[in-house]
Every structure is written in C-alpha cells, then in structure tokens.
Length: 233
Length: 152
Image 1 (cartoon, rainbow over the protein chains, first blue to last red):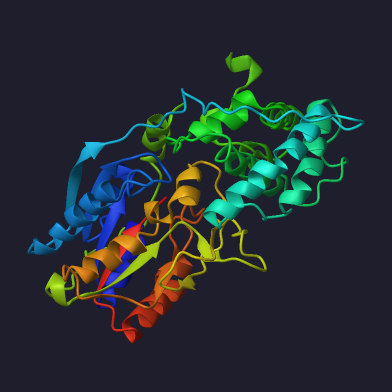
Image 2 (cartoon, chains in turn red, cyan; image 1 turned 90 degrees about the vertical axis):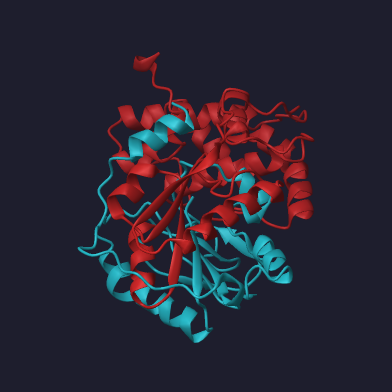
C-alpha cells in the first residue's frame, strides 16, 4: 500500500493512503497516511455506517493540508473484531440421505445463499466452484478430515481456493439467516466453530499439515485467526 | 488469535522503501478529481473474476460503480462479510459521490484501480516498474488529481 502510494505520487498524483497495519506504513512511508485501528477487510470502518465512513475520508483528506511528508496520523476511533461472538444463525434442517452430514448441511444452505445473492447482488464464491458446486466439495473435505489422502479425493483445484469457496458460501448464506449486520469476523467465527463444514475443513487442515502438505496448502485453508491445532489446545 | 493480534504479527513484514518520499502538491480539494486505488483484489465478475492468484502483481481498472465487482483477493485472513453487505467498506464510491454532490471534492473519476495486497515479493518490482506506472497513466488520462488508497 505504502509503496504503491509512492509510485502514484511520483507520477504526479496526490495520494492519501488508509492504513490498517501501522507498522507497514511506518516501513514503507507513503506521502500521506491515515492509520485506523479497524479490523482487516474493513478499512472504512463499519458496513452500513456512512457517517463513520465519511469521517474517515474527511480525516484522510485533511492530510492534504500538510506542507510536507511523510505524514502519518492516527484516526481517533477504533473498532475491534467480534470473533468471540459468532453470528447466531439457525442452520436449516437437511436430509443427509446417503451423503456426508457436512455435505447435506451445505445443500440445506443453498436457498439461504441464493437469498443473499439476490439481496446483495454480489458474491465471492467462484474461485473454483460455484455455489451449486459447494456441497460436493464440502463432502471431499469431510473425507480428508476422516483420513483420506488430500491428493486422492478429487479436489477440483487448489485446496485453498476450494476452501475459500466453501467459507465464502457459508458466510454469505449466513447473511440471510440473521437480521444483524455482522461485526468483523462474526460470520467467519460462525462458519468455523458452528458448522459441520467448518469443522471438516479445520480437521482436514490439521490432517494435511500432519501429512506433510506444503505450508501454503494447509495454512490458507482457514483464516489464521481460526487455526486450532490439537497440540495447541 | 484475534484480528488485533494478527495485525500486530503483520507489522514486522518487510516492505520496499524509497530513498526519498515523493511529493505532489495537491490541488484544492474542491477542484480535485478523485479516484480510489485499492489493494483488495477487486475485479469484474465473470471469467476468472473471483480468483486472483498469490503473487500476481497485476492491476485491474475498475468502473465508477461497485456493481458487478468481485473481491478476488487470495488471502483468507480478513473479513469479507462487510464487503458483501456494503462495498463502500472497501471501495467508498458512494461516499465520494456524496462529497462531489456537496462540492467538497471536484468530481469522481470514471476510472479506478485495484491491485492485490499481501504480495509475497515485498520488493513489489512489477508494481513499482510496470503495473503501478501503468495505473498512474490510466488515472492521469482520466484527469485524476487525487487518489484515496484503501487496503484490506
């Protein structure tokens, strides 16, 4: 971020960078930066809070009055994540039939995901599979969690990207199962700690790590904030 | 580990530092044409839209609307639910339009840009020497004066 700001400034554009990781702007020294103690992924503060978003931008643009740089100023308001309070969602009942219960759970969430997509008009699902393809890959992670070799279950692509499609599907479905605007990491925490799919991916992550999979493949299956290893319990 | 601890852990990552901090004297805000440049990994939906590979230092030109954009960043280590509910949390295009309507800024650019942060190559050689300058040219061609950069 800081390096990029300097590249643009050097080309003749005035720049103001928002910062979430203070040490990084201290290192890269962009011409003007406003540091905000906000959770990762939410540089403007809170979704659906235009007044706060505007205060952030006003504070950022106020740095344009400074005669020289680098300028690094702290925004006076802070926001904490709410991972300790997972979203409260009732997972729709689903008939497992002859599929893994985690796969059945994902099938049962498809209507909720479709409602969210219809309501918000955007999705982050689709790195490898689309929403309709998520239940099947949940079943594949459940098989890894239950002891099958990760290279042999037939994952349709990079495991980290498949896992991202699952997580994003669940978090987006959750938005239709609650009236609340989620605090930062509340949906993530619900997915990992309250759903069968989250449990399957967590156990698959541990199994892949113990089986000697490359760091990239097991580390990026879940956010590092949610890694739970048996030896760390 | 919570978000605050993760941010602390990421503070020590290496970054590229220029010998001298570049400086462009800004125009008065009320006369400035403003663009957003984000490192959120935004790109238009369709094709490979939802997928931005680790290490890819490409830049993506964006329209002046969040409609049809996908957050394709590879890293799982940040919240995405905010983006789904309100894209202004990352790409504050509605806030800029309000500021233009009020006369606080001159205008909102037609062209905006996304890169993807969390790059493995901390020297950002491609961004410094190729895609960064290319993004600057695209913004200058749209008569942009001022850039608001947003991370994730």
